[in-house]
Amino acid sequence: MLSYALRRLLLLVPVFFAISAIVFLIIHLVPGDPLDSLARIGSSPEQKQAIAARYGLDKPLLEQYFLWLGRLLQGDLGTAIVLRRPVADLVAQSLPYSLALGGLALLFSSVFGILAGLVAAIYKETRIDQGIMAGILFGSTLPSFWLGLLLILIFAVQLGWFPVSGARNWTALVLPVLTIGLGGTALVARVTRTAMLETAQKDFVLLLHAKGLPALRIQLRHVLRHALMPVVTILGLRIGWILGGAVTVEFVFARPGLGTLLIRGLNQHDYPVVQACLLMLAMAVMLGTLIGDLAQAAMDPRVRSALQ
Amino acid sequence: MALLAVRDLSIDIAGIKPLDGIGFAVDKGEILGIVGESGSGKSLTALTVMGLLPLIGGRVARGSIRFDGTELTTLPEPDFRRLRGRRIAFITQNPMTSLDPVMRVGAQIDQVSRLHLGLDAKAAQARSIALMERLRLPSAATVYHHYPHQLSGGMKQRIVIAMALAADPDLIIADEPTTALDVTIQAQIVQLLVELVRDRGVALILITHDMGVVAQACDRVVVLYAGRVAESHGVQAIFAAPRHPYTQALIRCIPRDGMAPGSLAGIPGSVPSVANYPAGCRFHPRCDRAGAPCAATVPPLEHLPSGAEVACHFAETREVANA
Ligand SMILES: Nc1ncnc2c1ncn2[C@@H]1O[C@H](COP(=O)(O)OP(=O)(O)OP(=O)(O)O)[C@@H](O)[C@H]1O
Ligand SMILES: [Mg+2]
Image (cartoon, rainbow over all chains, first blue to last red; front, side):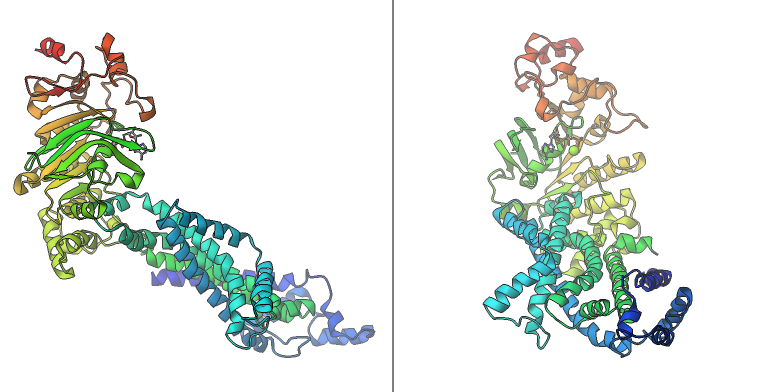
């Protein structure tokens, strides 16, 4: 198992290089020249030339990439062009906000999604199941920025329970966490329910009933246990997705974070910032998938021994 | 008074009636065979006696199941649950899929004695390992900690049997316990079950489609066809003088080694599906001796002087014909 984990980690190395290349190149596909935001309006071509030289923008693209990669490997993400601060500092400042938001949203969708799926599966084809599934269908069709605005309107503007925006204290987290978490909850609930109903059809579950075990215990200890394996994989995939989703939500709630930093970088053509943010998000997706796969392997003895 | 007596049992699953008025009885120390081709209703019979019909959305429509003086068809689920695994145990058809793949096999046996006998973890483990040894599982103490996928089919079936025995049941229902196993293992498992019945005096219902297994193991046999009893009698008598044409056909084509399990080459056609049961005698379209009444009237299950119960309009005639 450990060697499998190490192998999977090693496999991430080439993936990392591929991602870094894509992230580096992508910035050159965005319309607009970073030089325009660097140089004052009306700067002479000579002034522009000097600025380009200062930031290494006059070198060939490939050389720029390797210079950037070399610094990246030493943990140097470059200096933000507009903010004139080390990008690493900016990222380090934003990351905790995004991790808190993403982590809580993930926790929220796991707990409530699994719970809703479990209850729906146990009460399958009753009013309870239908009610939960209707809520899930509703929840999964709402785009998160729209849901965010709706929540702000109801709970922040109308009721005044939570702040409209910002990140001053924990109450400011509630609405953004809900905004990101609700969609995930719907997904997790659906996967949990389907996996449980599928598992309940299996021969071994029939035999558990034949052994006289109470139905609820069979559901919780055996059926849910099996259903959690696909759920864990989904949750792993969600990790990256949630951080990505946080981009719009942070923006809607005017929260500091990786997403806000990214959007600001994009608006200002501050490409070192954009590159760093994209890289962080891509790595979150990679690591999330890896964590999901490893957790699933850890839960299934068949997979474990296949990996020996 | 038999330990288990099933009378005139009919079930209903979402409007269809796969079992129609079946009956049989089995006593302690006795092995009752239930035979029939695929689709004749053997597994549903087992499921019904176990009280697990609601799991697949079915219910008992008519008839009675008496177990040791208790009527099971009206027994509330909490009471039934205490019977399941404790007094009536079940061995399923496919050991490959009958164990929880993510739970150690020992723990799966322990569950039964912990639940029904109130044993603590240590006592349950000791009991399970002793049972596994009794069932001739090699290095039982090690296998106890294995997961199902680490075991062979024969070993898994022994684990399932150990689960069935863990709370000392009075009745064991084994639904084709050997179908999924190698031929050599099949005979071992049947032999093991026979031994258990003789040693412990439990009652065993052995479901099979193999008349060879019936001859090897059973005391009495019920032949099912399309959800009805075709014939029921003692094993020696039924092999000596089968009355129902279906029984005769089954005996004619006892599977030999190498034949695909479940295929009965001697009888053309197959069991009709529940939706297409013919009127009259359900076997008549495949019967080489069907006469005028067979397509019109359901033959009642009649007690012959020999002690056999046969549902065939020409049962008596055949007795003469076969003599
Ligand atoms: N859950 C169900 N719902 C509806 N019909 C069913 C269900 N299970 C079985 N049947 C039908 O009832 C009939 C008897 O099925 P059963 O499984 O008892 O047969 P069997 O004798 O055990 O066959 P096999 O040898 O293949 O195990 C078949 O026609 C089958 O299609
Ligand atoms: Mg069957």
